[in-house]
Image: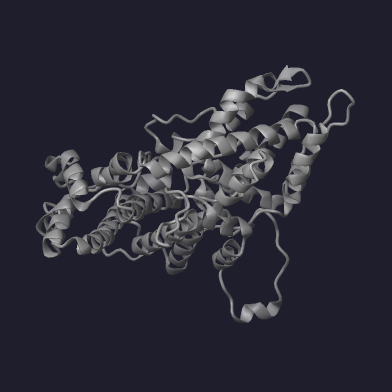
Length: 487
């Protein structure tokens, strides 16, 4: 792979030429992408979607929008660190124009990375996939179960619904005018898992195969984008874009630090709780240096046998009263985030050759001194103190009721929505549900129809997913209450 192609600014839909006067004060294509993203309604809706906690009355708690802004900022900074590094490690083949492009692509991709996430956080993904897994085979179309009509991949796409694949779907709609028409480099960077629903394996050695990254409906789009940026291997497989590794690291860093800070502010754990739990998991032997010999001595002398948790205890000793616990933890989170960023860029540099060859299979923290740290912060601590908290559990229970209700009503409504036959046609209630759909979703479906009965049925089911996953938390809750007669 080569940066000259990886940073392609080609787009899915050709845009009208700009007035020649605009060339007097030019901006690059990725800056134009940034403008279109922040101006889009689909991006703005993230302000009313749950990140980890239900929509909180406190302005401090992050939403999906503020999380995306943080990921975007971290990703851009990682890109700058990569191209300006002063170590003896690669990359050495990035010129100034490419360095600017890398930072801009990551800025845009960070804003878009959660675009396909449904309401109510990641649990919303589980609910949508689970609903199709439980119900799809029992729903009949013209007297036959849907499971007997759809192809295996179509069926798997629905029961394994993934926000990453949905984000690609949203952007792919640019082909027929309704999507955000961003550059191929940005779209390719977003595809963390270039794997379909029949091939993904959450236990695979290659992290790029842990989830499905695209639906069957978007395969041609992904193939087209991959050809534009040059991420197709000699074996005709689609590889991860190198910047996808950095975007993933930025997302992990934001999640492991910012969301943890929110949990602390909500008093889900104390500083003592955190330190005790962290130390119970952290084997000090894992602090042994793993960096290459030429850098080991410097890092050994300065930091790596002073673990992050030792730094937190030192900060706490300086501020003994309870009022300063929040300040102490916030300062430590900022310090930790910077070290995690350092480790991520180092991981990219050290594995640069394999990444550019499309053969690297791990994340950027693998083999660094913070490999275990990121796991503790992102998974263990959150599982211990956050995911079982009453506010999160209540969100999950209520969201299951809301999304299951909406899926049941709208899936039934679209079955015969474009099929004229006295024996198989929408009921009067179905027609009313169809009228609720935004005209954009109907137009998208009309533009993508193939004439094949099974494929078009699959596309109508995806239209329901488009509608429901695009809802904000508040809209989904309000619509449920209105349609169920609660208000």
